[in-house]
Image (tube, rainbow, N blue to C red):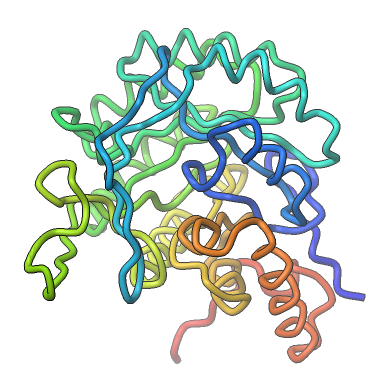
Length: 311
């Protein structure tokens, strides 16, 4: 038997898979489906203080190699989730909440409330929502990021993680890692979508989504090299006690395996989940098991964080 179990912030998961926040996890029905799926854990949609309709449709589109979206944080507001989360306690796996308040004060209020919800295992603060018009990503402002992390860490009673945007310069990796290493952050999630991509329909000679003139976050298989670099670099730079959740470009069991090699403890699935639904976890787990058997690995410990360098 292959042991696919893993742990995150001391919480055991039967396998390393979970949904990425934003992927089929906003409504009651979607969260119940994720709870009943074969994933090892699940997470809610990034929520704001008040309900939001989000950006105008169409705001999501698939293309060859990935997806583009400019959702605009549609969600029913944190009070909806506060009252609904207890219903999800019947599923025997950890439940995470994603928080993306539009201000520091909003985030403090939401996280303070979520800290008292027994059904929640952990909270992920989203510092990387790239698709709200007029709002920059907090994760690219290091002074602002430090302020957010310091403020919410003081009041959060659950294991707290941060979802980060993709970084490309080693200096930026080092700056963010230094901030996180000085905090009580328990995990980081790398990465959110690549901001402000543009997908064009050549037949119609037009963009494929409506908000922001067609610009949106890019996800799917095309972002995997960037996701892996962020997972691996943060695993190198962060204290061993701070864990890493990999997210980006997961379409197969091989992709999951690569995230684990790069240093991920848990792997989130976004675009592929939206395209195929929660049953996709069954296929990904089966493919991962096949890889593990071929390599004669008996558990994730045999491969996790053991990416080799060329000699």
